[in-house]
Amino acid sequence: MNAFGLGLKYFFIDLVGGIVRWPVWWYTKGLFLTFQWATSAIQSYAKMIGLVVWMKNIFVPMYGTRDWQSRIISFFVRVFQIIARSIILIVWSLIMLLFVVAYVSLPVLSLFGALFHMSAFVI
Image (cartoon, rainbow, N blue to C red; front, side, top):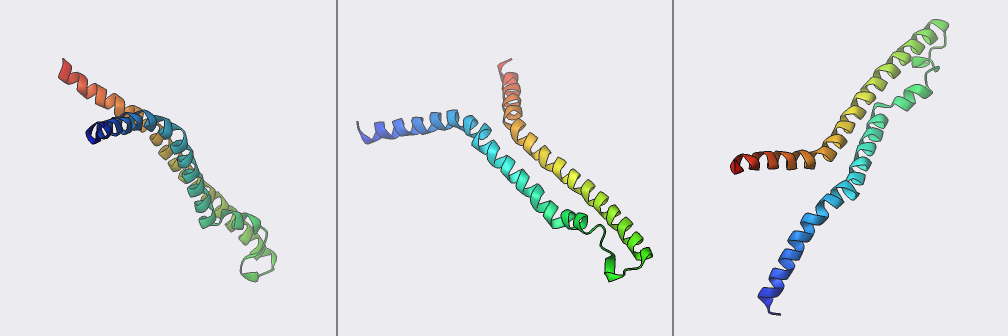
């Protein structure tokens, strides 16, 4: 086979093979990588806001003061911080979940939009 024939063969194998393999990759390995990314983003954000540290130190008085008034104030400040930071982490987790849902639905919506707009040319 000549170079032109080989070029056409490899072009169409790559083109058709890429078009056929792309959805399989998108919904298998690509989806797995997206889940890994979202999970890592949530874990790193939880580490950044220090939620576990606040929970571990809930009964430790702030600023080293040991009287009962300081212990009560420290406890309620930490409870408030834990609640506020948990809400922030839940909101961040929902944002990451929206990214994953967008990743899953984007190809389907794009195909639907393309077919919808191509049908206007047919009519």
